[in-house]
Length: 119
Image (cartoon, rainbow, N blue to C red; front, top):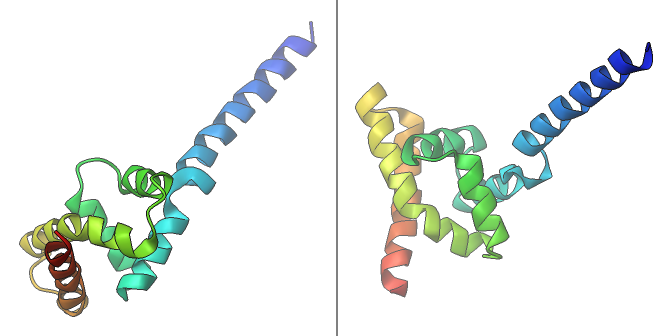
C-alpha cells in the first residue's frame, strides 16, 4: 500500500520532466533558431522577440518544423523573412521605433530580397 503513492509521485514527476523537455529540450528548435539569428547577424533575444510577434503559432514549433525539414541555415533564414518582416511591423506598432529593431531591418530586408530573387 505504501508503494502506490510513491509510484504515482514518480510518474507525475516524470510527466512534468517530459513536458518541460519537449518544450525547451533538443527538439524545440531553439538551437536552430540560435544558428539562424547568428547567420542573419542579429541578437538572439531580438530574433526571438521579432519571430514571436510575426508568427501565429509558437516560434519554437516553427523553428522545429524548419529544422525537421532539413533546410540549411541560409534557406531557413530566407523562409523566415516574411515572418520576421511581419514581426518588425508588429513590434513597431506596439512599442514604436527602437534602435535595435532599426538596426535589424536592413538585415531582414536582405532576406526578403534574396527570397524574391530566388523565385
